[in-house]
Length: 122
Image (cartoon, rainbow, N blue to C red; front, side):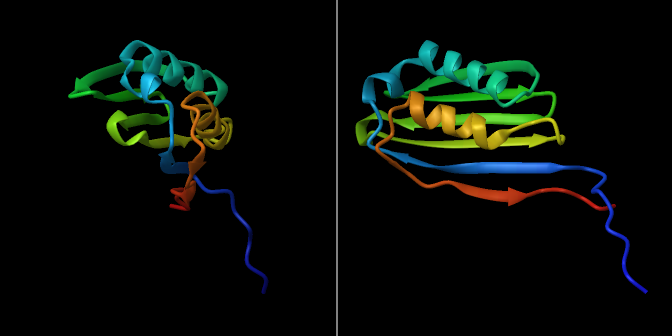
């Protein structure tokens, strides 16, 4: 008997990575980073619920809570480095597109991108 292919009950997609050789002026700019995250949420077809950011030394941490999960950026301008995490639930979202938008906006010359399937069959 062949197994039935079922659609996961929860579709979870996570795209995350490290961005190198970014523009240090953008990495220091809290307001610019908040706008980049807000735009990435829209591009990824997610629904923004709240966004918070903190200046930490020269760096910035931005956390956006979206109806579907979250988007984060953490920056280290002194190393032209940032980490990005886009995690969303729902077949309608596109976290990869949101991640790529952030890479472009931070002007990263190199980056790593990892993908994880966070879906549940149960």
